[in-house]
Length: 173
Image (tube, rainbow, N blue to C red; front, top):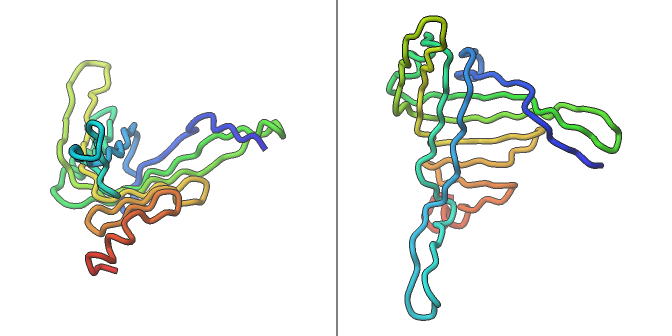
């Protein structure tokens, strides 16, 4: 069964699970592990060692064609709950048929920057909102494949909870 994920057919952006925000393209955050250089006796050189389950700043950016009401609403200095819901086109190469795999990215985020864009006759204005992501969950085809919650010491990737022992050691579990 050769499944070939071909492309994102389309997606929508919602706030609080229900309010459609409009037409935007999205730059999802990178998962950059926090690291510390380890060197000394017993190591032949240096190792940039990742801190288990910890990530650097995660930034989400929504790019709008024009200034919209959601552009202003999302500038409010509070935590915003956004859902990005998409449909991925997958070719079943064995059967020669397409199917749709649902994608859902949920984030809790805090506004860092709001760009009102530019004004140019007959052109898009390129307004945008940029956020610091404190929680992200990625569900693909009904299976949660990533969940990172910085404030609650949660880092689950492909079903493995990498901070479970850390929570226990800290008296949180």
